[in-house]
Length: 385
Image (tube, rainbow, N blue to C red; front, side, top):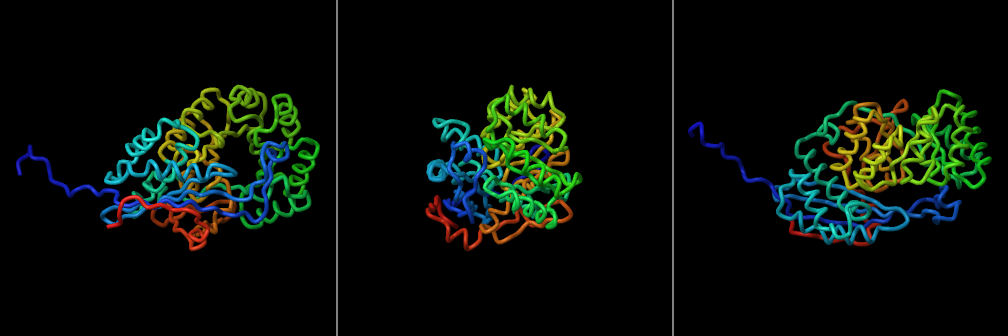
């Protein structure tokens, strides 16, 4: 072989088969936050999960997921099934290229919301496949900064929980080793919000990190008053005090108060997060990887947040965000929700206020028999080799 002759390489692997599953996870009891108490939504009783399993002609496999709450599950599944054929025969390593192709395959329905949430399941599965093939955890594949992340509990602090049980739940979470506690606020009676938060602060003391979340239900004057009331409590953040798209309102709160403002979980594209960052509308950015379209757009958002000097607190889906949080330059907070645990055979480990990053290849997850049992609809694209 002469110096000008390029070396030969084996033929690239290609995607041969995809299975999509629409799985509905029932919740133990109806869940209420401020959106329910203000009459804008009904209590949540289940979570619609979209799973994508991808297999290549060489036998490599990846698992990814997206989700929706209260509405959108059938739509996500239908859109995913419609665009999935784009992936058959493609090189699974070309993840960014494939994200763009999937996006354009469904461009007539937009580049945010349900359209990209369906893409998210494929994107996560492709990253899982790539990491598994390399024998690395997802965080190691992406370039991990740490082996554990700070975590806080949300599931014990919803508004349907009586104040006496709220205090018990918070103490139990701390005893279990979870690092912080988040409480839901935003009720029509603000005085009740104050009593609930103060009761938990008294029980836990000043050393336990405490956050609150109004789920977008305050208007600007109410948000000003409530942020001022909660300022002395030393909260880690006040989350979604205003409508998710009120960038200027959030920016005004962030500039006025010492308590950090956190928002971003309801945004469903990189462009929307970019506007949030441009307005300096948050101290903590809270992107949700499945909601923004997967790991590919999440990493772009995180890079913008890092450049702006923002904290990171990914929303929900701890099984994925524990890996993505481990990659962020500064110490993040990852939300501890145990709701999705029945769907997987593996469990995350909590120790001394931190969530340990799994060392198993990829996400380190496999679907449980229960997830199969809760599946209402599935589709296969391509052919298994």
